[in-house]
Image 1 (tube, rainbow, N blue to C red):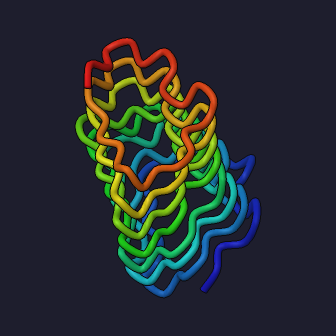
Image 2: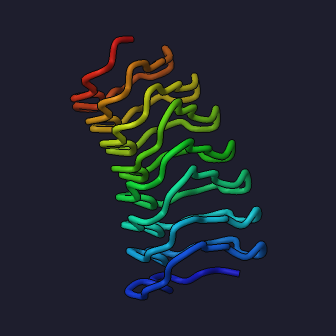
Length: 178
């Protein structure tokens, strides 16, 4: 099963959203600017497309992406500022794309999975409540503005494998000490 592009965009959909167990793909902007407050994703989900949950400003709590997830589109969760708690990324994910989690409210420690090789432009831009990030040896590139404005970030572990750190990648991380 697939949830198509813009399937619920422009609707007043609200409350808890439970994605059926047989759903493997959520299309572009499928839930763009809806008022969903919580999200339970299918354990068979393989793909979340561009902007699927963009601007879901009522979406709250931790975000646990299922282990089956292989790809996530740019800006998939951009401007979901009420998301708080942990972000749990699946071990099959190879890229954290452009703007994927921009302006989300995740707190605490972020552990990037060993499968990830690139962190895209503005991926965690203005995630002001993140406190630490552990980047694995598999990552070779951190994009422009990737963590810009993460004002609570105090610690980042960047391995020797990283050969490119983009423009302003950690700029305005005013609490960064190590």
